[in-house]
Length: 358
Ligand code: NCD
Image (tube, rainbow, N blue to C red; front, side, top):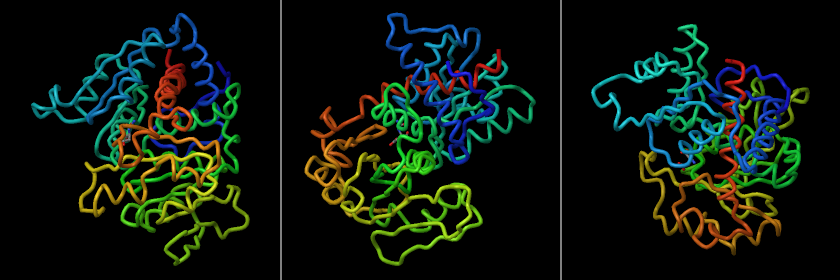
């Protein structure tokens, strides 16, 4: 395992992640990837610790992958599902978390449909003065750090399997396409990709990518006290910093209300599910039209670099955000390796949070 010290107690957001932290996660995940390729895929690292998966919202891959990651590290796991819990009898979220605390939980992995719930549980644990770490496994439209970190790991290991690191993405063109407005995956990915020095292109219909949202993103990305120029042309809109002496690299973030400029010469394309459960209005004329304009297909990929790869966090609406045949095409699709990488990356996160607790 890398010997770098890790000081972060909770993982709630990537907005303030440092390059060292990204690289530590990537290197640690690479070590666990190696462990997972052995005949005996288990290490005693978190023996005696308890990892509770508090999923107040549905999940297939994130929950299973955290559970498997915890088991591979020899931790004891507790799985909670809201629908079959005492919440149906009126128990509150914080009382539920305190119940798991009383059982000796060391790490709480929290997913909720409302933004801020993992932060609230983390604040309560801190207030109680206990050493419990909270890991955000997706909160509303806010963030999904472990997904963005596994996306990062998937891309970096493709470029350099022996030594995945953030700088490998410098100058790469990465398109994030789809329901950006409602996507916590997009938000966390924007932080990590901007930090890597990649050129990030967001493409969506204007209803799913409002300008105000982009301004907020850049402000939150740590480039505060700066002004941004937003071109008034509908596409592309480029946002860039005006301040010359910023210690941070100028974020390379572009907005497009059409797909083609985002795909032009792209190295990687991340597609996102239409988050119908979070749409409060009719934001699209029809799914058919959306697929025609923004759906990723083999034909549209011809605009990208010849060896372009496509990612999707899943679950996929086949034939909507991505064509069914492209999704299953191993020449382009990284969807299955994302799921596989997820276990190693989540082992790394649990290890980094848990190793200080023994
Ligand atoms: C994502 C999520 O839940 O935010 N999925 C996941 O964690 N693998 C994306 C989505 O639901 O579309």
